[in-house]
Length: 326
Image (tube, rainbow, N blue to C red; front, side):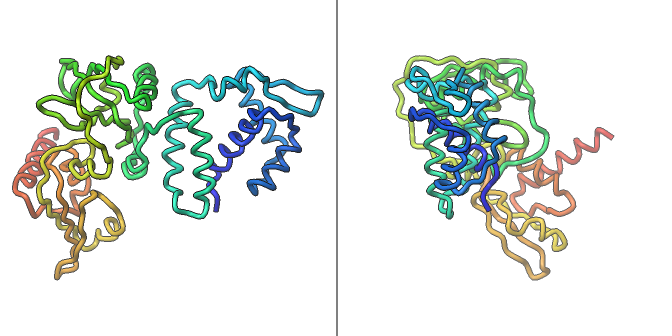
């Protein structure tokens, strides 16, 4: 079954592309072309809504009589310079990332075509698709205050620009300033994070919370060798948004909770086995970080830490601090 969001954006961009080609079309023409070329059935009312949306974004369309629509030559030369606000631009980037999950399927050909069209509106890859679909949770942040930062990152990432960031560390009042090279965004627990490369003595890729970025400014290109970046490989050295030296983690999942853990990926390096008592044993190589402790505590009735001792101590300490609140 075709994804309805895919169909809607595909129709709108198909109409936009046809108008940019310089032809004159009626709503009946568009209906026939979509049905014959894309196997999509679209009502007259829906088509008119798409045309009105295109008119809103590009400024105007020329009406030929009472039947035909045409894009003026000046607008066609401008290409996809459509007036998008940061929320709309962000939506386009997320949609591009969303479409990648359909690659290697029966609609791959259409996906490739649509990605090319979307790239006219939102060039470059800003969001990592794996980060979008694996790290979902409730509690979305309100990024109204961060509109300028978000808009600039959506511009700087595709441009491959170095930036100067003012960043407020969680739990600290002090604001740090540093130069970095933004690579990609991902979502985790309702928040948006930016993966950046920091050069120097502690060179490496780090995750910055968008809501903790006070400002971001483009700077001159730095003389630094930027290593290749693979989100999947980088994820092996983190749990949640925290990174660090990896350790062998071994957890016991009680038998009655196994169904919640089967066929789910909690970490890129995980292995699932079963012990003699029917309990599940989850092993992975991950850093002992706050997000890992928090995740274990969220399954407090189901999970027992087997090793390492450091992780056991961190879980016990977190439980004691929680009890102090009561």
